[in-house]
Amino acid sequence: MRVHTICAMAGLALGLQLLTTGCDASADTAAPEVATLQTASAATSAVPSPVTQERPLIRPDDDPATVDRLTEVWTACLIRQGIPITPQRPKVDLSDERYRDKAKACESKLPEPWLDRERRTNPHFEDLMRAEVKCLKDKGYDVTLGGDPLYPMYAGGPSESNRAFEDEQECQRQAFQESIEKYKG
Image 1 (cartoon, rainbow, N blue to C red):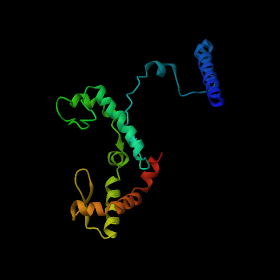
Image 2 (cartoon, rainbow, N blue to C red):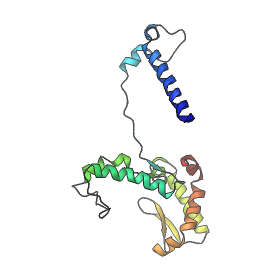
Image 3 (cartoon, helix red, strand yellow):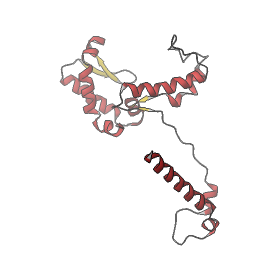
Image 4 (cartoon, rainbow, N blue to C red):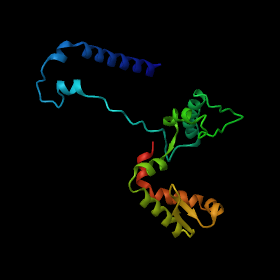
C-alpha cells in the first residue's frame, strides 16, 4: 500500500510539473539568458526521423520461461493477424503467400537471439566465430567454420555436434565474452 501511495504521489508531482511548465507562457517567449544549442527555427523545421525498432532480444542469461513469454507476444500478434495457429496446429509455414504479409506485420515482435543480433551488428563477428571454432579444435573436435549464416560445422555431423554442446557453449562464452556482458539483463 505504501509503495502505491509513493508512486501515485510521484506521478502527481511529475504531472503537475509538466502542466505548470507547459502552461507558462513566459517560458516559451522569453529569450534564454544563457547560450543554448536549441534555436526557434530548428524547433519548427525539425522533422522527426523514423526510429528503427529493434526486435525483442533473447539475452544470453534468459531462462526458458522468459523466451516463452517473448515468443507468446509474437504468436499472439500472428493470431490477431488471422494466421491459423492453434494448439492443434502450432506451426504454420509463414513463407506461404497466404500468410507472408500478415507475418510481416508481426516481424517487429519476433524475438531475436543475442547471437543473431551480434551477427547483424558486430563487424568483428566472423573473427569471434573463428575464435570459438579454434577453442573447439583445441578441445579435440574436428570442426570448421562454415554455412550461411556462419556456424561451427562438425565433421562427425549431428552426433558430434550433440556431443560438443557443452564445450561449444563454453567456447562461445569465451569468444563472445564482451558481447555477452553487453547483452546481460
